[in-house]
Amino acid sequence: MKNKQQTIQSQFSYTGIGLHTGENVTITCKPLPVNQGIKFKRIDLASQPEVTATVENVVSTQRCTTIGQGGWEINTIEHLMSAISALEIDNLLVEIDANEPPVTDGSAKVFYQLLEKAGVKEQKATKKTHQITEPIEVRDGDQYLVLLPADELKISYTFVGNHPGLTDQFAEFNLTTGNYQEEIAPARTFGFAEEIEKLKKAGLALGGSLENAILIEADGPVNELRFENEFVRHKILDIIGDLKLAPDFKGHIIAVRSGHRLNSILAKKIKDKVL
Image (cartoon, rainbow, N blue to C red; front, side, top):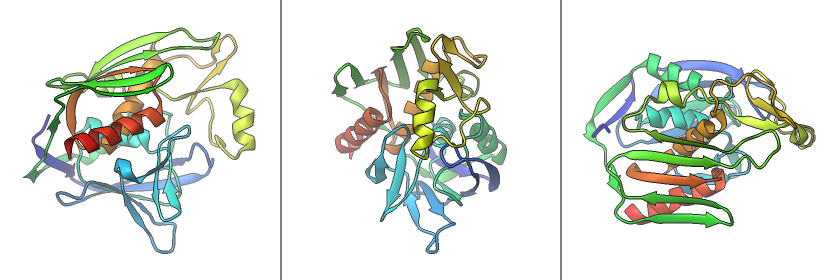
């Protein structure tokens, strides 16, 4: 891991469909000075408010990770945050003209490519990376996360299908030494056919399509998969994004059935432990 803080060299903009609104949304990413963190700015609102992407600003973890302050919010930040984390970017301003980033293809691939193309620039200030010294556990029924001491950042995830069209899957990824761009970034989000109508009636998933999500019917996925174990890889992608909301740390995460809610609880426990 880098011991210096990093930002991007040049700003860029990207326009695409929002997963839940189904409307076009534009993000513009800009460099920030040291010690600023990852900030989101709602330029579509009159006061153009900003919020820092940290765990205390999480306002919802239902189906996605949502941050906000004072009644306004930005949801579905986890894929963008995952790419930011993988590239070890510490200071960045994300201007956005809606309440969620573009869904792109349902993975972190586009965000990773855009950030990489903008260039990652080392800054003068040192980055503090916390060493986990004792286990931290989060559990809810048959879902759990355990963070163990380690000299690197590694994730071991067990995905339990719990659906006739899915098999159980396991994957392990070392964020310190692994190839995130090839192994994790392209893994797409997924949804179940029986839930789609319910979501759309609730005003959600209006931008969802086979172009940006894997659809699972009774007998299995409709789309052609990018990886045999794409579902568990996407779960690892989400954990990387969600735990970017915690202070930087090294450790080995063991996850079983975990989702955004447990990820957020673990991020808060890490913050409480190391700060």
